[in-house]
Length: 168
Image 1 (cartoon, one colour):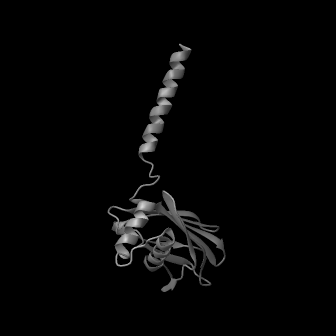
Image 2: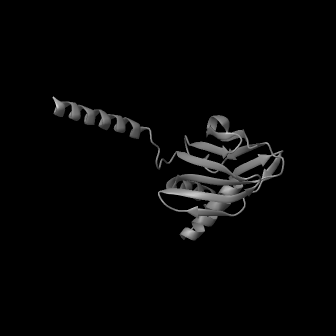
Image 3: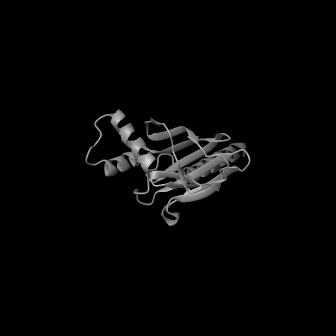
């Protein structure tokens, strides 16, 4: 009787894990995560994570006349693409992303560690055009700030990959 109960428990756990894994988007081509974390009163850290294949597709599409030949060239083109298409605005002024770094892998990350915000800025509008050319792409935006806590938004075609949030 005890062995049957243990076996039943193991089967239930296995089935539950299989069901959970179906909804995970670990390295999905059509899924990315964008994290904004408030580092100090006027500084944010921005991290965009997606599959390498998704970033490759964007770079190939936007730099087809000068394709990359090395990983360093790919990184430069990817950073240029993101700086051009990922827009942060506050008080109707664009906020510069600053210097970025790329960490290549199946899950590739692009990090801007020191995004400087204007003083007295209360809310930001973010538009993630960096991956909008990928069919059915969605980005989970996670904004973390001391006073407002954690806010999450889903950016996709239906909202033009745009969200507005408070950063007080």
